[in-house]
Each structure stands twice: as structure tokens, then as C-alpha cells.
Image (cartoon, rainbow, N blue to C red; front, side, top):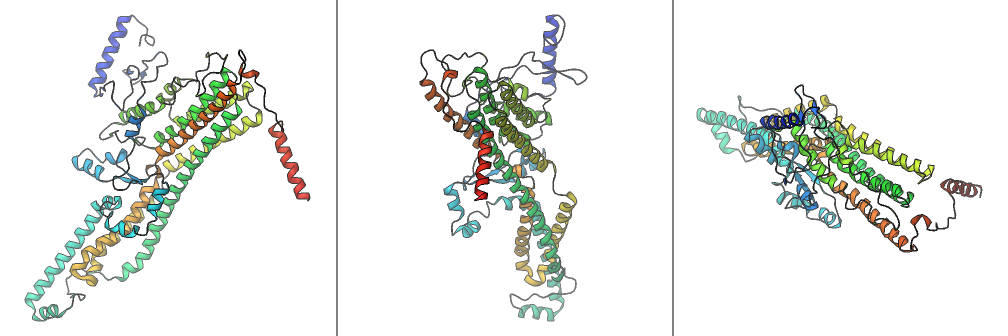
Length: 535
């Protein structure tokens, strides 16, 4: 504050105290220093009278004390106790169904199913011969689809069915009391025969048979398009995994660690690649799949603060001083000056004015490739390849944002929903003449469960970012980068062990090269292809 506001020190201290009291009076939550979800950042910012934010940080604030990796994993969704191949996620928007007790209970009851990464064991269980029997006997009442449809859709169908059955039975009993012929007919009918009388609620089955075909096309077409969005989202994450591995490998293989500047560029590139999937996870979801974040009744600014605190804790494990020089450490004779790879980057990334943090990371990666080109650590062809791979980062980010921001045409979705609801709610009136009072309710509820279930599955995967284990994909990218860094460090330690006393890494003899450059390699490939074609 003293660095930002001119005036005597006493005035600054008074303003800081008044600002803190104002924040507390506005309902700000005072968090303990060791809270699992909140990082110990600098002093809170003061809000000016006209709503302008006065920064309380004059210099780059240090990263918070790191939370253990085990504590971060505890925030992630846990596999179901009865089936460890998937997660029933009830965080995020499923906890914001309203501030009432009923809304909170529905948020806990409802959720969405997320299939975790499968291995050989899970695939074997997925293909068991008894899977169909198990689905009906074991997991029907634990099904998330049933839970999501139980209220209000299936409840309304059951209530309408019970009302129609009760009314028709009342009409039948009155007719039996006044007419001996009706009583004799009812006494002689079999279990599959239904006595229909004037005044009963009933509909013919022909309209449902004719409209059911059109309804099936509408629901199937919507679900198929939603599944296409789900598949595209998974392909985008697969592309992100492949491109991240490729960029990390090219940086490690192209930029030699023969100077402090090169070592800093290598380390910054590795950390940016590890930070990118984490930023995607928080960019596309309301809580970054942190189940401990409760957004019930919270304002948007407080939700963002909780997300930033969790994101900062994850970044603290990537941007730390412990392995600032990489797993291999510093080479003999190399100075540590200038090697630390921009540890203030998380503070710049988490500023309020940064609207798209993944885009910020992509731009920083572009600056790294520009620095590699300017320093001469890699040739123009290698740098061009790196630029093209970073361009794929931008393409993936844009495609993910397009899926997030653009739903299936909403009039189509609304029309399909109205058609489906009317069809299912009127179905009991057509079931009663066919199945009678005993079969109308279960048959109507079962058919409605099947029809509503298809539509509900499509609605869940229409925005696929809530149905994919993005935290596992981010861990896959980070683990791959860490493995390549350790592999490269092992090779560097072997090379540095061959150095003579006082010799620097730059003095190491380069391995013999049969092909001088990538351009010569391309020319050789073209000549080989031409000779094969001529032959």
C-alpha cells in the first residue's frame, strides 16, 4: 500500500486497516493460514470508493507454501465404492441447485458419471459375460440415470398413471354397483382382459405408435450429436497429450544445456507444458474438479477466489525453486546466475486481468521458442517445427472453447424435450386399455425411464467437459514430461561425468553426424523417393 499510495506512513496504515474492516463487513471469509483450499498469498487488495481495485502488491509476491501432493489428490473425485471404473461427480454446479434444503439434497442426490481411464483389469470386467445380469440385479438402483430421472420426470409419470388407474377404477366400481351386466362381465374376464366403459380416461395406441417413430428419430439424432461432441472432446485431449509430449521432447533434444540461458529456457518450457493442462481444467469447469469447493450460495467473485487458490496450489508444485536447475542440476563450471526459470510466472498468470490463462501460457511458450531462435540454440527448421506444434495448442484451445460456448441449437433441444415429456406423460392413458390397472403404472414408468434416459444421457455429454476425467489427462501429461526430464537428466549426468577437471559442457566433443542438417535429410528423402519411383 505504501508503494502505491503517496502520503505519510500513518495514512497508509490507517487505509489498510479501514480496507480490511470493510472487507470483513462485506462478508469476506477470513481463512486460516493452513486451510487446505487457500494459499497464503499477499495481503488482500483494497477496493477504491468507485470500485477500482488498488493492488496491495508492489513487488512480485512469492509462491505460497506448497500443499502436499496427497492433499491435492484428496480434492479430486473419488471412484465409486461399488465400481472403481468410474466416478459419480456431485461437485460444482450439482451443489448449486438453490439455497433451500431441498435444492442441496437434490444436488447431493443428482450428479454425473465420469468414466475413469481404463486398464486391462477394467476392460476385462467391462466385457464379462454376466454384465447384463449384473446391470439389472446389482447396479440398477445405484444407477445415476435412475437417480437423475427419479424426480421429477418419473415421479410425474407415476403420479399420472396412478391418477388414471384410480379414476377408471372408481368409474368401474360405480358401474358394477348400478349394473348387474357389468358386474358379471368383470367377474368372467381373465387377467389379460380389461373392461372399458364410457367415461374412463383412455387413448388409442395408434397415435403413440405413429408419433413414437418421429420421437425416436428426434431423441436419437440429438443423442448422436451429443456423443459426437463427447468423442471430439476426447480426441482434443488426446491431441493435447501427444503435442505436449512432442514439444517437451523437441525442447530437450534441441536446446543443449551448455549455458545458464539455455538451461533456463529448457526448464521454463517444461514447466509451461505442465501448467497448460492444469489451466485447461480450470478454464473449462466451474471448480476444476475439486470436490471440496462448495459453491452453494457463493458469489462469482468468491468462486473465482476458491478456484484460484486451488490452481495456485497445483502451480506451486510445478514452479518451485527445489528443482530450478532440473533433475540433472548444474553442470561443472556453470554459474547459477540466471538459471532460475521465471518463478514469478504463476503470480502473473493468476492476475485478475488475465481472462484466458491457457492462452497466456501458449503465448509464453511462443516467447520461449523466440528466445531459442534468437539465442541460436536451435536451427530455424527446428524452431519452425516447435512453432507449428504450439499452433496446435492454439487450435486445441479454440476447439475446446467452441464446444464449451456453443450448445446444440436450443430450439431443437427444447422441441425434443416438449415432445418427449408430452408423449411420456400421456402414455398411461394408452397403457390402461392394454394392460389394465395392474400393468399400467409399472409399464408406463419403465417406458418413460428408457425414453427419458436416452435424452438425459445426451444432455450430460452435450457439454463433455463435465463427463471426462480431465484431472487424469492433466496428470498423464505432467507425468510424461517429468519422465522425459529425468531421462534427459540421466544422459546429462553421464556426459558431465566424462568432463575433465575444469572443463565446461561446451567443450564436449559433439557426436559425429552423418547428415548435417534437417534440410539435407529432407533432400536425401526426396532423392530416395525419386529413385524408387524411377525404378
